Image (cartoon, rainbow, N blue to C red; front, side):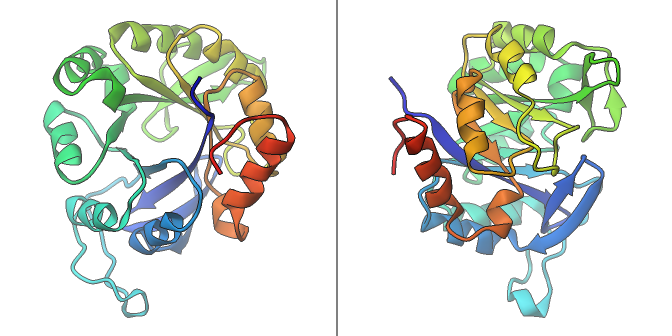
Length: 262
C-alpha cells in the first residue's frame, strides 16, 4: 500500500511566489528557486508549482534576490528543476501537448492541466497516450455556492463552467488522467481546513489518486483530508509561515495513525 504523500503547492505569479486567498488576493512572499532549495532539505514527498500569471511577463531581476535573467517561464522552470531533487509537478498555462512536452523537457515529472482540459477534454486522452497517465494530473478548482451546490471554475477561479466536480472528475479519469488535484476556492487561504464533503464526494467517485488542497490551517487538517479519501494532502500558505512545517505535518499524521515517510 502506498504511503500518503505530503505536498507543498507553490503559486507562481509573473516570476514571484505568492500566497493566495480566495483565488483573488495575492501577496508576494519569495523566490521560486530559493524555495525549491529550502524544500530539498525538508521531508516533503513532492512539489507542485502552479503558474497563475495572467500575462507572459516574468521578472526576477530584483537585486536583493540575486537571481537574474529569469525572464521566461521556461528559464524559471529550468532553474527550479536544477535545484529541486524532489518529484516535481508543473502546472498552469498548459494548453497543448507541446506545452506539456516543454514542461517535461525542462524538468517536470508530471504536468497539471486545468482550464484547457475542460475546454478540450480530448487533450487529456492525447496527453495520456503520449506521456503516460501517471504523468497527467487534472487540476479541478471548485466553488461552493450559497445554496450548497458545487461548480467547477476555470481561468484561476474567474470563469464558471456549469460543471459538477464529481462528474468532471469521473470524465477526466475515463479520458486518462492519472491523478486529480482538487482545490476549493472558498477555502483557499482561509486556514479553515479542507472542504471534507467535497473530498469525499470526488474521491468516492474515482479510482485514481486524489490530492486534496485548500484550507489547511493546522497540521491536524492533513489527517482529516486523508480520512475523507484523499491519497495525498497538499497545502500552500502553511509552508510559508511555519518553520519545519514538514516535520510538524508528518508528526501530526503519525499521531493520527498514518504510515508516512519521515
